[in-house]
Length: 516
Image (cartoon, rainbow, N blue to C red; front, side):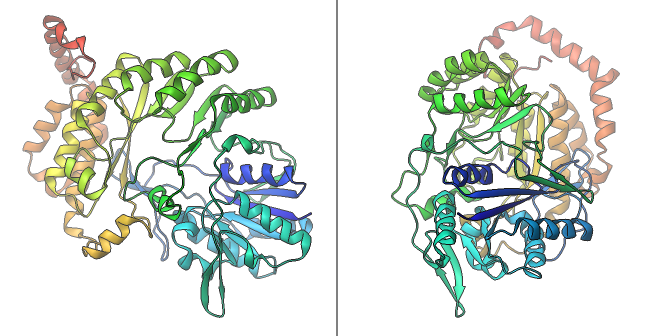
């Protein structure tokens, strides 16, 4: 029997680690999970970006940059707590899930562990899978691909005293050479896996210089929220996404796999019986895409769970049937990602399926069904010209406000097709001359989200040429006050009067209207 420790930085949900923990426990192994700090985003201006850091950056409502995927630094006192805890547990192997934005923080923790321990450290997750040669100098082993079978084999090697060098999916350095072992086949039957490990036993939380044992929190969201996954994989191949690179690692295999509706609901029932849960958050991006799966899931969910839930929604040809079904089951909030309103950017740069009319149809169907939503926008793209930014702004204005938004600087993940394309085209050198243009349009994007009638404000603001050179004068608080103050109310009233005279245009939810 092996003793395995998983360390999770800034993520108490740690879905992958909790799944592997449950799988290892079922096989009789001793598993401990250490949560080192928590994750939060407050959308304030970002700290200085450190050398070696790959920041995932957003633009807040005031046009300021902020960093996702980070929080307060891990202190020397917290590292000492980690050392004392590891020496007490005395593990045979340490596993860490690493994503690229947190590679620097994971490197620091790994180097600290190696300063006092010879226990092998295995990195897993998207970053080691897509960028194993960059990660291997920083750890002992990198798991390239899914880690369920890999961690089981490692635990078996611990019991038999064998080396890890023959374990499937592992990469490592020997005699200066990077070696990558054969891959294990993808797990086809996700129902065969145990549900994620939600127990508090052998869970530890380190923050603010304090160690909490038998830690019961399930994630970093509000109390009562439960995060679930119903699938693995993605049907698309967006150039900026690590899923496409993962798919390339498993050519010839069925990459997109789905748990049965009954297994998903059974997990939720079990979680509800053990925790005070009042909402479900489905994390997989394809949750609302398959009409057959959703049609089977909804009646079981309504009968056995019947809690409001949050999910990702993707515009599909069946969206008119899917959304009412999901609404009837409790869908209260969703992500409906635009990314870019430019057909050129979506098709040529992102290799992303995009239908402007279908997207707007989905927007207005959400509004008709009173499903609140937010949209993602990706900008600061080296391939973006002003016409592409204007296309995105036009779509946001056609959405008629009343939605939340995340504006993100394009994150070029090393190892993806987009990273290769950017390097090939010489776009990896930042074009600082465009920064003001991007900043200007980001502020206009935010204005578009505030009100059903933001179009008139945008048209007026675009007449002020000074704002293009000095976008910092586009103060979001002032613009929001104007839109929602006396002038805005007057404009809304006129728009409402026009709508009363022509209600027929509202018969189709995909038709944008100026009605508040």
